[in-house]
Amino acid sequence: MEYDSNVGIEEADITSGVGDSASDLSLGISYDHKIDHVNLSASYQLQDTRWQEYAEFNSQLHIGVLRAGYQMGVQGVDFSLAQAYGQVDGKDFLRLTRASPAYSRLIGNRWYVRTQADFSRKDFSQYDSRNSDSFAGNLYLYRFLDRTRFYLSGQMQLKSERAANEIYSYSGALAKIQIKRDFRIFDKKLSSRLHARIETRDYEGWRSDIRAARQDLRYRVAFENELAFNRHWQLQAKLQQEWFDSNLPVADYRQWRASLGLVWEF
Image (cartoon, rainbow, N blue to C red; front, side, top):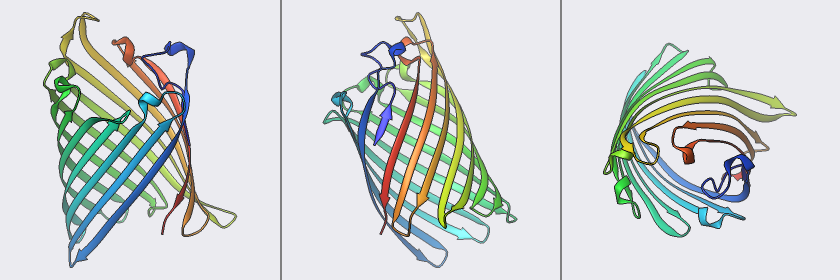
């Protein structure tokens, strides 16, 4: 179950706070295999969202990932290839292909660093002018305070996306920080995550509707919890607040989202 405070952002006055609730279905399957120092994996995930009022925003997303990695003691290299296909309102919307080489290293038993490059291609079925190629460079840093039970992590990203129409082309930067902590409550495991991120985008094309190039500044704060009842069942809850500051009116708004999910793993 999910609630979003601003679903139909283009249809309703954004100050009225018109929201909607939805049912979310998430299914996934994965396979992992290890040969000496080589790790191979494949996964598929389905995400389906159905809104009660704004049915035109119903969406379905399919994601497939292939990954190969080689571990050399405290350092490792890996390469992943991802393919995503999305529908909105039952119609083809987006195809995404992404190739990501990466290098990682464990420094002592407290620090872990990872660098990753993302080469992506987007194809929009109904909006050819938004088709694009992009590159993103990522740096991840982890500080372990109690192994993976308690740690801090951060991410820095620089990204450039070039679209068929330059009004959709942009250069941007992203920063994210997260703290994760595990607790024991009535002999049950509770995992809590608090994370915040800030992203900036400077678009290239001049827009006649705002008589300027688009500029965005986005903030997000989220609090997530997972309560494990046993080996198979988990209860997940998430509360998220987002601020979208933009000189493009349709992209300038605030929203909050809440979700509650029951997970079964076998």
